Image (tube, rainbow, N blue to C red; front, side, top):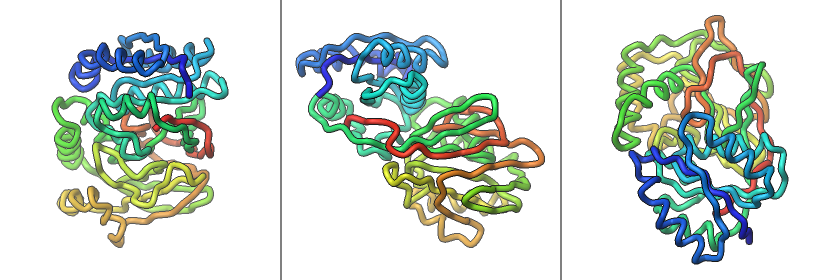
Length: 295
């Protein structure tokens, strides 16, 4: 069990919930014989830099205290560092907590801190998005098109993750225009699409089961193509996505792959773990068992 830990704390996560909870959580870690030091983030990218430095300094447990975006940044820092035998711990204080749903980590902070102290370490896959000039890693999903537009709009809304996501969906639907998309690689598809999602875990958007069969430890990614649908039809789909029933729709195509390339004549916006990250073309691949997680 790792005892030398470093916590990356996003004080803004959950409307300040992370900052309020951290002193109590830190005390519980210390009482659990985890030697923990910490640093707080102040801007985008700080969590990646701090996690990379912590791994390079020899910490064997790096804890992300914040939301899914903070976890994503920490994961990127750990993998960029190149350090081996570094374990990720998660204390979820954000809105969505899809990383908890995908990896089996408790969404309750008190239960989550118990897992950091007493849990077991497991190896999970990591997705890789290659933009050509840089790469980004993800635990949950990446997507091009409509869902990336939703991610951009969701960031503007406060409140519970589900409500913020629904607000983002409604706004994005108003400007929806399915585009010609080509997917190549282990899975081939061309046509007009609303979105193309490549998932390592089943859940996105605060509980939407976008890829019901996705398993973050199976060495593969699940590709979900939402075809050419109208605005009203897409809104009618929304409840079915929370159940995972949308994959039965005739305009939804699913496949499993280890690498795909997504391109479009007009570049489409891209999100990585729910965070706006750039635009197509992208190459998405998987690194099996590349990350160790405490749960």
